[in-house]
Image (cartoon, rainbow, N blue to C red; front, top):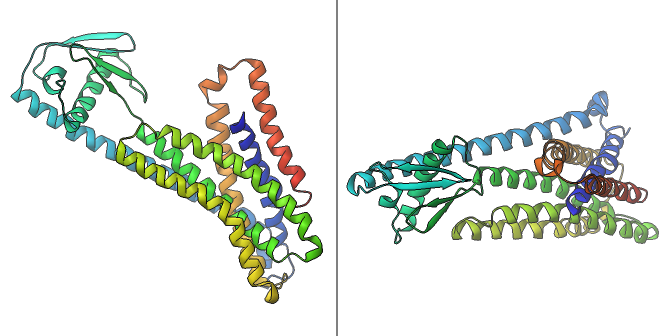
Length: 336
């Protein structure tokens, strides 16, 4: 429910806070004539560029991870073949999801994965066992599958690092869009006249609270998905997620400090400032639109097998949570 509420918050931020502001900036008569010729259409242009860049980065990252894993498994299979030639043994039985098969080849799993196997040998066995079981059971193994090697008392887990990396990148790009918007909000807060400051501050606090809930739920999910990595990868993920969690609460205060510093020289009708705000809002809107519909709603709702198996009552509660998130941002939009 919290995740669906967060998706609604992100959608509401893009539709109600970013898009109208971007159109307003690019419709300003204070812009140079060259920018006024194309006018509000620049919002769509910059938003489209941002969405295309995010999609390209995700595809490139996914292909890179898939290629790296394929090379690692190929090298592991070669090592296993060498080890099997040196240590032939009897049959081993492989079991996954109820499927069993006898193997009496020189490359038997017990030969290369004794009880005292080293970490390198365990990686080798994981690659060989996974491919063998896939052939035996007639299906593709997925992340989380567990393979038992009979006679060894050991289990091999199949990991899905590619999906975790792609999800982490998508969340990182989403945070980048939210950070742009948060800095702009802080800048506006820093240059706000004293008479309007208190009202805007209260609105910004609620705005950032809802966005923080949305972003935190997604970061928590990515962190949980990467908890099964090895020690070094786990430490790296922990540092990265801690940094991501720290950036968001600092973004609006940073913008506020900048706004206070330039308050004396601030000119709300400056062509450069209007253009900067318009471009940042357009880029942020493009990123949030792509992540909301192509990533979050598509993966978590429309094409989610888990969501389809929920009861009608729980589905209704999920939809209501998403609509409440969007509605909360709509209400905050009255003031900020």
